[in-house]
Length: 509
Image 1 (cartoon, rainbow, N blue to C red):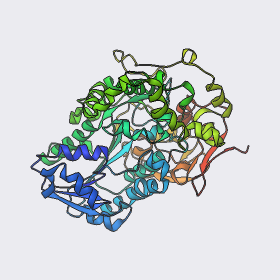
Image 2: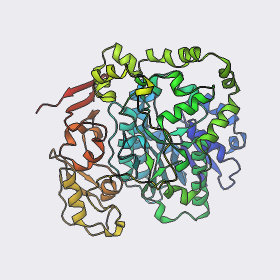
Image 3: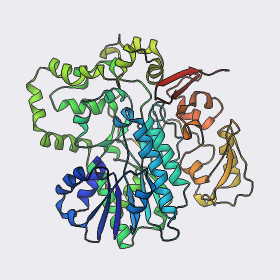
Image 4: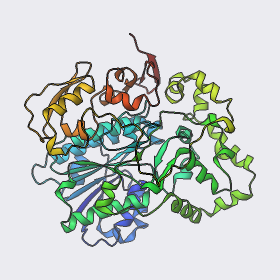
Protein backbone atom coordinates (compact mmCIF):
# COMPACT_ATOMS: atom_id res chain seq x y z
CA UNK A 1 0.00 0.00 0.00
CA UNK A 2 1.28 3.46 -0.92
CA UNK A 3 0.55 6.34 1.47
CA UNK A 4 0.98 10.02 0.60
CA UNK A 5 1.54 12.34 3.58
CA UNK A 6 1.60 16.11 3.96
CA UNK A 7 2.62 17.79 7.21
CA UNK A 8 4.95 14.96 8.19
CA UNK A 9 7.33 17.40 9.90
CA UNK A 10 4.58 18.84 12.11
CA UNK A 11 3.82 17.73 15.65
CA UNK A 12 0.97 15.45 14.59
CA UNK A 13 2.82 14.31 11.48
CA UNK A 14 5.94 13.24 13.36
CA UNK A 15 3.87 11.16 15.76
CA UNK A 16 2.02 9.59 12.84
CA UNK A 17 5.30 8.63 11.18
CA UNK A 18 6.59 7.12 14.43
CA UNK A 19 3.39 5.10 14.70
CA UNK A 20 3.90 3.74 11.17
CA UNK A 21 7.20 2.04 12.06
CA UNK A 22 6.69 -1.69 11.67
CA UNK A 23 3.51 -1.38 9.58
CA UNK A 24 4.56 -3.91 6.94
CA UNK A 25 1.50 -3.42 4.74
CA UNK A 26 2.93 -0.01 3.78
CA UNK A 27 5.25 -0.45 0.80
CA UNK A 28 5.95 3.24 0.21
CA UNK A 29 5.43 6.58 1.93
CA UNK A 30 5.43 9.63 -0.33
CA UNK A 31 6.27 12.54 1.93
CA UNK A 32 5.78 16.17 0.93
CA UNK A 33 8.65 18.37 2.13
CA UNK A 34 9.80 21.98 1.86
CA UNK A 35 13.35 21.22 3.01
CA UNK A 36 15.14 18.03 1.97
CA UNK A 37 17.79 18.55 4.66
CA UNK A 38 15.22 19.00 7.43
CA UNK A 39 13.21 16.01 6.23
CA UNK A 40 16.25 13.73 6.11
CA UNK A 41 17.01 14.70 9.71
CA UNK A 42 13.45 13.76 10.60
CA UNK A 43 13.73 10.40 8.85
CA UNK A 44 16.99 9.61 10.66
CA UNK A 45 14.97 9.67 13.89
CA UNK A 46 12.65 7.05 12.41
CA UNK A 47 15.21 4.96 10.50
CA UNK A 48 12.97 1.96 9.74
CA UNK A 49 10.94 4.20 7.40
CA UNK A 50 13.97 5.64 5.60
CA UNK A 51 14.17 3.00 2.86
CA UNK A 52 10.46 3.07 2.06
CA UNK A 53 10.08 6.86 1.99
CA UNK A 54 10.12 8.97 -1.17
CA UNK A 55 10.53 12.70 -0.55
CA UNK A 56 8.52 14.96 -2.84
CA UNK A 57 9.83 18.51 -2.72
CA UNK A 58 7.62 21.56 -3.14
CA UNK A 59 4.57 23.45 -2.00
CA UNK A 60 1.12 22.01 -1.41
CA UNK A 61 -0.22 25.04 -3.29
CA UNK A 62 1.49 23.83 -6.49
CA UNK A 63 -0.84 21.46 -8.34
CA UNK A 64 2.05 19.86 -10.21
CA UNK A 65 3.67 19.02 -6.88
CA UNK A 66 0.35 17.61 -5.68
CA UNK A 67 0.07 15.44 -8.79
CA UNK A 68 3.56 14.06 -8.17
CA UNK A 69 2.80 13.48 -4.49
CA UNK A 70 -0.42 11.52 -5.00
CA UNK A 71 0.67 9.62 -8.11
CA UNK A 72 0.29 5.91 -7.36
CA UNK A 73 -0.98 6.54 -3.82
CA UNK A 74 -3.83 4.53 -2.33
CA UNK A 75 -4.58 6.95 0.49
CA UNK A 76 -3.56 10.49 1.44
CA UNK A 77 -3.13 11.89 4.95
CA UNK A 78 -3.34 15.66 4.57
CA UNK A 79 -1.93 16.94 7.85
CA UNK A 80 -0.16 19.91 6.30
CA UNK A 81 -1.05 23.28 7.84
CA UNK A 82 0.41 26.62 8.86
CA UNK A 83 -0.84 27.03 12.43
CA UNK A 84 -0.62 29.77 15.11
CA UNK A 85 1.61 31.56 15.87
CA UNK A 86 3.19 31.09 12.41
CA UNK A 87 -0.15 31.83 10.73
CA UNK A 88 -0.33 35.15 12.62
CA UNK A 89 3.22 36.04 11.67
CA UNK A 90 2.99 34.83 8.06
CA UNK A 91 -0.67 35.07 7.00
CA UNK A 92 0.17 34.67 3.31
CA UNK A 93 1.80 31.33 4.09
CA UNK A 94 -1.38 30.23 5.89
CA UNK A 95 -3.45 31.14 2.83
CA UNK A 96 -1.03 29.31 0.54
CA UNK A 97 -1.00 26.10 2.58
CA UNK A 98 -4.36 25.85 4.34
CA UNK A 99 -6.57 27.27 1.60
CA UNK A 100 -4.83 27.15 -1.78
CA UNK A 101 -3.08 23.93 -0.80
CA UNK A 102 -6.38 22.21 -0.04
CA UNK A 103 -7.76 23.37 -3.39
CA UNK A 104 -4.69 22.19 -5.31
CA UNK A 105 -4.77 18.81 -3.61
CA UNK A 106 -8.49 18.39 -4.36
CA UNK A 107 -8.01 19.38 -8.01
CA UNK A 108 -5.14 16.91 -8.41
CA UNK A 109 -7.27 14.08 -6.99
CA UNK A 110 -10.34 15.04 -9.04
CA UNK A 111 -8.31 14.96 -12.25
CA UNK A 112 -7.48 11.29 -11.72
CA UNK A 113 -11.07 10.28 -12.43
CA UNK A 114 -12.41 6.98 -11.11
CA UNK A 115 -9.30 5.41 -9.54
CA UNK A 116 -8.77 8.17 -7.02
CA UNK A 117 -6.91 7.71 -3.74
CA UNK A 118 -8.84 8.19 -0.50
CA UNK A 119 -8.33 11.58 1.16
CA UNK A 120 -8.14 11.98 4.95
CA UNK A 121 -8.18 15.74 5.51
CA UNK A 122 -7.22 17.18 8.89
CA UNK A 123 -9.26 20.24 9.78
CA UNK A 124 -9.48 22.00 13.14
CA UNK A 125 -11.53 22.80 16.23
CA UNK A 126 -10.80 26.46 15.46
CA UNK A 127 -13.72 26.40 13.00
CA UNK A 128 -16.16 26.50 15.91
CA UNK A 129 -14.72 29.79 17.15
CA UNK A 130 -15.17 31.11 20.66
CA UNK A 131 -17.31 28.94 22.94
CA UNK A 132 -18.49 29.77 26.41
CA UNK A 133 -21.48 29.16 28.66
CA UNK A 134 -24.18 28.14 28.06
CA UNK A 135 -22.79 26.27 25.02
CA UNK A 136 -19.56 24.79 26.34
CA UNK A 137 -20.24 21.52 24.52
CA UNK A 138 -20.31 21.17 20.76
CA UNK A 139 -20.67 18.67 17.95
CA UNK A 140 -20.14 18.41 14.21
CA UNK A 141 -23.01 20.43 12.78
CA UNK A 142 -22.65 23.40 15.13
CA UNK A 143 -22.38 26.77 13.35
CA UNK A 144 -18.86 27.62 12.24
CA UNK A 145 -18.12 31.10 13.59
CA UNK A 146 -14.38 31.51 13.15
CA UNK A 147 -12.91 34.12 15.46
CA UNK A 148 -12.08 37.56 14.02
CA UNK A 149 -8.46 38.04 12.92
CA UNK A 150 -7.70 34.30 13.22
CA UNK A 151 -6.38 33.76 9.70
CA UNK A 152 -5.62 30.15 10.57
CA UNK A 153 -9.26 29.27 11.23
CA UNK A 154 -10.47 31.29 8.23
CA UNK A 155 -8.16 29.50 5.81
CA UNK A 156 -8.87 26.09 7.32
CA UNK A 157 -12.60 26.80 7.00
CA UNK A 158 -12.19 27.49 3.29
CA UNK A 159 -9.98 24.44 2.85
CA UNK A 160 -12.46 22.14 4.59
CA UNK A 161 -15.39 23.47 2.57
CA UNK A 162 -13.43 22.77 -0.62
CA UNK A 163 -12.99 19.14 0.42
CA UNK A 164 -16.66 18.73 1.35
CA UNK A 165 -17.80 20.17 -1.97
CA UNK A 166 -15.20 18.32 -4.05
CA UNK A 167 -15.74 15.57 -6.61
CA UNK A 168 -13.51 13.21 -4.67
CA UNK A 169 -15.04 9.76 -4.40
CA UNK A 170 -13.93 8.91 -0.87
CA UNK A 171 -12.93 11.44 1.77
CA UNK A 172 -13.18 11.99 5.50
CA UNK A 173 -12.62 15.24 7.39
CA UNK A 174 -11.24 15.16 10.91
CA UNK A 175 -11.33 18.32 13.02
CA UNK A 176 -8.29 18.16 15.28
CA UNK A 177 -8.87 19.44 18.81
CA UNK A 178 -6.41 21.34 21.00
CA UNK A 179 -3.25 19.24 20.85
CA UNK A 180 -0.64 18.63 23.53
CA UNK A 181 2.77 18.04 21.96
CA UNK A 182 6.36 17.88 23.16
CA UNK A 183 7.26 21.34 21.84
CA UNK A 184 4.25 23.17 23.27
CA UNK A 185 6.02 24.84 26.19
CA UNK A 186 9.07 25.88 24.19
CA UNK A 187 6.84 27.17 21.37
CA UNK A 188 4.91 29.35 23.80
CA UNK A 189 7.90 31.17 25.28
CA UNK A 190 8.66 32.89 21.99
CA UNK A 191 5.33 34.54 21.22
CA UNK A 192 2.37 36.27 22.82
CA UNK A 193 -0.03 33.59 21.60
CA UNK A 194 -0.58 32.15 25.09
CA UNK A 195 -2.31 35.39 26.06
CA UNK A 196 -5.04 34.56 23.53
CA UNK A 197 -6.13 31.61 25.67
CA UNK A 198 -9.18 32.67 27.67
CA UNK A 199 -8.99 31.51 31.27
CA UNK A 200 -12.60 30.28 31.08
CA UNK A 201 -12.39 28.70 27.61
CA UNK A 202 -13.45 25.02 27.36
CA UNK A 203 -10.63 22.89 25.94
CA UNK A 204 -10.75 19.17 25.28
CA UNK A 205 -7.16 18.16 24.73
CA UNK A 206 -5.72 15.26 22.77
CA UNK A 207 -2.04 14.40 22.69
CA UNK A 208 0.04 14.37 19.51
CA UNK A 209 0.83 10.74 20.33
CA UNK A 210 -2.83 9.73 20.30
CA UNK A 211 -3.40 11.70 17.10
CA UNK A 212 -0.58 9.77 15.46
CA UNK A 213 -2.06 6.47 16.66
CA UNK A 214 -5.38 7.50 15.09
CA UNK A 215 -3.67 7.99 11.72
CA UNK A 216 -2.03 4.58 12.02
CA UNK A 217 -5.28 2.87 12.97
CA UNK A 218 -7.10 4.42 10.02
CA UNK A 219 -4.41 3.06 7.70
CA UNK A 220 -4.58 -0.38 9.31
CA UNK A 221 -8.32 -0.67 8.80
CA UNK A 222 -8.05 0.71 5.27
CA UNK A 223 -5.36 -1.86 4.46
CA UNK A 224 -7.16 -4.91 5.87
CA UNK A 225 -10.51 -3.96 4.36
CA UNK A 226 -12.37 -3.47 7.64
CA UNK A 227 -12.94 0.25 7.22
CA UNK A 228 -16.71 0.59 6.74
CA UNK A 229 -18.10 2.55 3.80
CA UNK A 230 -20.05 4.62 6.33
CA UNK A 231 -16.74 6.14 7.47
CA UNK A 232 -16.41 8.11 4.25
CA UNK A 233 -18.02 11.45 3.42
CA UNK A 234 -18.28 12.32 7.09
CA UNK A 235 -16.83 14.96 9.39
CA UNK A 236 -15.47 13.89 12.79
CA UNK A 237 -14.17 15.63 15.88
CA UNK A 238 -10.81 14.34 17.04
CA UNK A 239 -11.33 14.51 20.79
CA UNK A 240 -9.34 13.50 23.84
CA UNK A 241 -12.20 12.15 25.95
CA UNK A 242 -13.92 13.50 29.04
CA UNK A 243 -10.83 13.10 31.22
CA UNK A 244 -9.14 15.73 29.02
CA UNK A 245 -11.86 18.37 29.37
CA UNK A 246 -10.27 21.37 31.03
CA UNK A 247 -10.57 25.13 31.08
CA UNK A 248 -7.86 27.42 29.75
CA UNK A 249 -6.88 28.31 33.30
CA UNK A 250 -6.46 24.61 34.19
CA UNK A 251 -4.05 24.10 31.31
CA UNK A 252 -1.87 27.06 32.28
CA UNK A 253 -2.04 25.98 35.90
CA UNK A 254 -0.92 22.43 35.10
CA UNK A 255 1.94 23.72 32.98
CA UNK A 256 3.30 25.99 35.67
CA UNK A 257 2.94 23.23 38.26
CA UNK A 258 6.03 21.72 36.63
CA UNK A 259 8.07 24.55 38.14
CA UNK A 260 6.29 24.44 41.47
CA UNK A 261 3.83 27.25 40.88
CA UNK A 262 0.37 28.05 39.59
CA UNK A 263 -1.07 30.27 36.87
CA UNK A 264 -1.90 32.87 39.51
CA UNK A 265 1.78 33.10 40.45
CA UNK A 266 2.80 34.11 36.94
CA UNK A 267 -0.25 35.71 35.29
CA UNK A 268 -2.61 38.56 36.08
CA UNK A 269 -6.30 38.51 35.12
CA UNK A 270 -5.67 41.26 32.58
CA UNK A 271 -2.98 39.41 30.65
CA UNK A 272 -5.32 37.15 28.70
CA UNK A 273 -8.19 37.68 26.29
CA UNK A 274 -11.73 37.24 27.59
CA UNK A 275 -13.17 36.06 24.25
CA UNK A 276 -12.28 35.45 20.58
CA UNK A 277 -10.47 32.17 21.23
CA UNK A 278 -11.48 28.68 20.09
CA UNK A 279 -12.17 25.52 22.05
CA UNK A 280 -15.06 23.28 23.00
CA UNK A 281 -15.90 20.06 24.84
CA UNK A 282 -17.40 17.40 22.61
CA UNK A 283 -20.78 15.73 22.65
CA UNK A 284 -19.71 13.45 19.78
CA UNK A 285 -16.04 12.78 20.52
CA UNK A 286 -16.71 9.08 20.88
CA UNK A 287 -17.68 8.61 17.20
CA UNK A 288 -14.08 8.52 16.01
CA UNK A 289 -12.76 6.68 19.05
CA UNK A 290 -15.38 3.95 18.67
CA UNK A 291 -14.07 3.33 15.17
CA UNK A 292 -10.33 3.52 15.83
CA UNK A 293 -9.72 3.21 19.60
CA UNK A 294 -6.97 5.83 19.72
CA UNK A 295 -7.59 7.62 23.03
CA UNK A 296 -4.99 6.44 25.54
CA UNK A 297 -3.33 9.46 27.15
CA UNK A 298 -4.64 12.04 29.60
CA UNK A 299 -3.39 15.58 30.02
CA UNK A 300 -1.91 14.42 33.31
CA UNK A 301 0.06 11.72 31.45
CA UNK A 302 1.31 14.37 29.06
CA UNK A 303 2.69 16.64 31.80
CA UNK A 304 4.47 13.69 33.42
CA UNK A 305 6.06 12.87 30.07
CA UNK A 306 7.13 16.48 29.56
CA UNK A 307 8.87 16.43 32.93
CA UNK A 308 10.77 13.30 31.89
CA UNK A 309 11.84 14.80 28.58
CA UNK A 310 12.69 18.28 29.91
CA UNK A 311 14.31 17.60 33.26
CA UNK A 312 15.43 21.23 33.47
CA UNK A 313 11.88 22.23 34.41
CA UNK A 314 12.47 20.65 37.82
CA UNK A 315 15.05 23.38 38.46
CA UNK A 316 12.20 25.88 38.30
CA UNK A 317 11.13 24.79 41.76
CA UNK A 318 14.22 26.39 43.27
CA UNK A 319 14.18 29.52 41.10
CA UNK A 320 12.29 32.51 42.57
CA UNK A 321 8.84 32.80 41.02
CA UNK A 322 9.43 36.48 40.36
CA UNK A 323 12.30 35.61 38.03
CA UNK A 324 10.26 32.99 36.16
CA UNK A 325 7.42 35.45 35.79
CA UNK A 326 9.77 38.12 34.52
CA UNK A 327 11.62 36.02 31.94
CA UNK A 328 9.03 33.40 30.92
CA UNK A 329 5.84 35.46 30.95
CA UNK A 330 6.20 39.19 31.48
CA UNK A 331 8.70 39.77 28.68
CA UNK A 332 6.17 38.32 26.22
CA UNK A 333 3.77 41.15 27.04
CA UNK A 334 5.95 43.18 24.65
CA UNK A 335 5.43 40.72 21.80
CA UNK A 336 3.29 41.98 18.86
CA UNK A 337 0.89 39.05 19.39
CA UNK A 338 0.15 40.15 22.97
CA UNK A 339 -2.88 42.20 24.14
CA UNK A 340 -0.56 44.46 26.15
CA UNK A 341 1.28 45.28 22.93
CA UNK A 342 -2.02 45.98 21.15
CA UNK A 343 -2.98 48.40 23.91
CA UNK A 344 0.36 50.20 23.86
CA UNK A 345 0.23 50.57 20.07
CA UNK A 346 -3.44 51.56 19.87
CA UNK A 347 -4.60 48.40 18.11
CA UNK A 348 -8.22 49.15 18.97
CA UNK A 349 -9.58 46.60 16.51
CA UNK A 350 -8.02 43.65 18.31
CA UNK A 351 -8.93 44.97 21.76
CA UNK A 352 -12.57 45.14 20.66
CA UNK A 353 -12.42 41.64 19.19
CA UNK A 354 -10.65 40.00 22.13
CA UNK A 355 -12.05 42.02 25.08
CA UNK A 356 -15.13 43.86 23.86
CA UNK A 357 -13.42 47.24 23.82
CA UNK A 358 -10.52 49.34 25.08
CA UNK A 359 -12.50 50.33 28.18
CA UNK A 360 -13.10 46.70 29.10
CA UNK A 361 -9.42 45.91 28.64
CA UNK A 362 -8.47 48.84 30.90
CA UNK A 363 -10.97 47.80 33.56
CA UNK A 364 -9.62 44.26 33.52
CA UNK A 365 -6.12 45.50 34.34
CA UNK A 366 -7.42 46.71 37.72
CA UNK A 367 -8.74 43.29 38.75
CA UNK A 368 -7.02 40.94 41.17
CA UNK A 369 -7.41 37.19 41.27
CA UNK A 370 -9.63 37.28 44.35
CA UNK A 371 -12.25 39.21 42.37
CA UNK A 372 -11.79 37.56 38.98
CA UNK A 373 -14.13 34.57 38.44
CA UNK A 374 -12.17 31.57 37.19
CA UNK A 375 -13.75 28.30 36.10
CA UNK A 376 -11.74 25.18 36.87
CA UNK A 377 -12.07 21.48 36.04
CA UNK A 378 -15.59 20.52 34.95
CA UNK A 379 -17.37 17.69 36.71
CA UNK A 380 -16.78 14.86 34.24
CA UNK A 381 -18.95 12.49 36.29
CA UNK A 382 -21.99 14.38 35.01
CA UNK A 383 -23.42 13.56 31.56
CA UNK A 384 -22.17 15.94 28.88
CA UNK A 385 -24.88 18.44 28.03
CA UNK A 386 -25.47 22.14 27.45
CA UNK A 387 -28.14 23.80 29.58
CA UNK A 388 -29.43 25.19 26.28
CA UNK A 389 -29.33 23.36 22.95
CA UNK A 390 -27.54 24.95 20.03
CA UNK A 391 -30.20 25.97 17.52
CA UNK A 392 -29.92 24.10 14.22
CA UNK A 393 -33.18 25.06 12.51
CA UNK A 394 -34.29 21.42 12.21
CA UNK A 395 -34.31 18.18 14.20
CA UNK A 396 -30.59 17.38 14.37
CA UNK A 397 -31.30 13.85 15.65
CA UNK A 398 -32.92 12.83 12.34
CA UNK A 399 -31.09 10.10 10.41
CA UNK A 400 -29.54 11.27 7.13
CA UNK A 401 -32.02 9.25 5.12
CA UNK A 402 -34.93 11.18 6.60
CA UNK A 403 -33.72 14.71 5.80
CA UNK A 404 -36.48 16.35 3.76
CA UNK A 405 -36.97 19.36 1.52
CA UNK A 406 -38.83 21.00 4.41
CA UNK A 407 -35.73 20.57 6.63
CA UNK A 408 -33.56 22.33 4.06
CA UNK A 409 -36.05 25.18 3.80
CA UNK A 410 -36.34 25.72 7.55
CA UNK A 411 -32.53 25.72 7.97
CA UNK A 412 -32.16 28.28 5.18
CA UNK A 413 -34.87 30.43 6.77
CA UNK A 414 -33.19 30.12 10.18
CA UNK A 415 -30.04 31.52 8.57
CA UNK A 416 -32.12 34.44 7.32
CA UNK A 417 -31.95 33.17 3.74
CA UNK A 418 -33.84 30.70 1.61
CA UNK A 419 -33.52 27.51 -0.39
CA UNK A 420 -33.64 28.07 -4.15
CA UNK A 421 -33.71 24.41 -5.24
CA UNK A 422 -37.19 22.87 -5.13
CA UNK A 423 -36.69 19.29 -6.32
CA UNK A 424 -34.88 17.61 -3.44
CA UNK A 425 -35.35 13.86 -2.87
CA UNK A 426 -35.56 12.91 0.82
CA UNK A 427 -32.21 11.70 2.12
CA UNK A 428 -30.14 12.83 -0.89
CA UNK A 429 -27.82 14.88 1.32
CA UNK A 430 -24.76 14.79 -0.95
CA UNK A 431 -26.53 16.33 -3.93
CA UNK A 432 -25.53 19.95 -4.55
CA UNK A 433 -28.42 22.39 -4.14
CA UNK A 434 -28.69 26.15 -4.39
CA UNK A 435 -29.14 28.43 -1.38
CA UNK A 436 -29.48 32.16 -0.87
CA UNK A 437 -28.06 34.11 2.07
CA UNK A 438 -29.78 36.92 3.94
CA UNK A 439 -27.83 39.30 1.67
CA UNK A 440 -29.27 37.73 -1.47
CA UNK A 441 -26.01 36.01 -2.42
CA UNK A 442 -26.51 32.59 -3.99
CA UNK A 443 -24.22 29.61 -3.52
CA UNK A 444 -24.26 25.87 -4.05
CA UNK A 445 -23.51 23.36 -1.32
CA UNK A 446 -24.70 19.92 -0.33
CA UNK A 447 -27.25 19.57 2.48
CA UNK A 448 -24.52 17.58 4.25
CA UNK A 449 -22.18 20.58 4.28
CA UNK A 450 -24.90 22.90 5.59
CA UNK A 451 -26.98 20.73 7.93
CA UNK A 452 -24.47 18.12 9.06
CA UNK A 453 -21.16 20.03 8.95
CA UNK A 454 -22.30 23.54 9.96
CA UNK A 455 -21.23 25.50 6.89
CA UNK A 456 -23.18 28.54 5.63
CA UNK A 457 -21.79 31.12 3.23
CA UNK A 458 -20.65 34.43 4.71
CA UNK A 459 -17.99 36.96 3.78
CA UNK A 460 -15.25 34.96 5.54
CA UNK A 461 -15.47 32.24 2.87
CA UNK A 462 -14.26 34.62 0.18
CA UNK A 463 -12.48 37.50 1.93
CA UNK A 464 -10.92 38.35 5.28
CA UNK A 465 -14.05 39.97 6.68
CA UNK A 466 -15.78 38.77 9.87
CA UNK A 467 -19.35 40.13 9.78
CA UNK A 468 -21.05 37.99 12.43
CA UNK A 469 -22.36 40.89 14.55
CA UNK A 470 -24.56 42.00 11.68
CA UNK A 471 -25.44 38.55 10.36
CA UNK A 472 -26.46 37.25 13.79
CA UNK A 473 -29.22 39.84 14.05
CA UNK A 474 -31.15 37.88 11.40
CA UNK A 475 -29.43 34.50 11.53
CA UNK A 476 -30.94 32.47 14.39
CA UNK A 477 -28.40 29.66 14.03
CA UNK A 478 -25.42 31.99 14.27
CA UNK A 479 -27.08 33.97 17.07
CA UNK A 480 -27.57 30.89 19.25
CA UNK A 481 -23.78 30.67 19.77
CA UNK A 482 -22.39 34.08 18.78
CA UNK A 483 -24.36 35.92 21.44
CA UNK A 484 -22.90 33.78 24.21
CA UNK A 485 -19.83 36.04 24.12
CA UNK A 486 -21.05 39.04 22.09
CA UNK A 487 -23.75 41.48 23.11
CA UNK A 488 -26.80 41.57 20.86
CA UNK A 489 -26.31 45.27 20.21
CA UNK A 490 -22.67 44.95 19.13
CA UNK A 491 -22.28 46.19 15.58
CA UNK A 492 -18.67 45.74 14.49
CA UNK A 493 -17.34 44.44 11.21
CA UNK A 494 -13.82 43.05 11.55
CA UNK A 495 -11.46 42.84 8.60
CA UNK A 496 -7.88 42.66 7.37
CA UNK A 497 -6.71 45.00 4.65
CA UNK A 498 -4.36 43.81 1.90
CA UNK A 499 -1.38 44.21 4.24
CA UNK A 500 -3.13 42.30 7.04
CA UNK A 501 -3.63 45.32 9.22
CA UNK A 502 -6.60 44.76 11.55
CA UNK A 503 -9.71 46.94 11.30
CA UNK A 504 -12.95 47.09 13.29
CA UNK A 505 -15.57 49.43 11.93
CA UNK A 506 -19.08 50.28 13.06
CA UNK A 507 -21.69 48.84 10.75
CA UNK A 508 -23.49 51.53 8.82
CA UNK A 509 -27.22 51.26 9.47
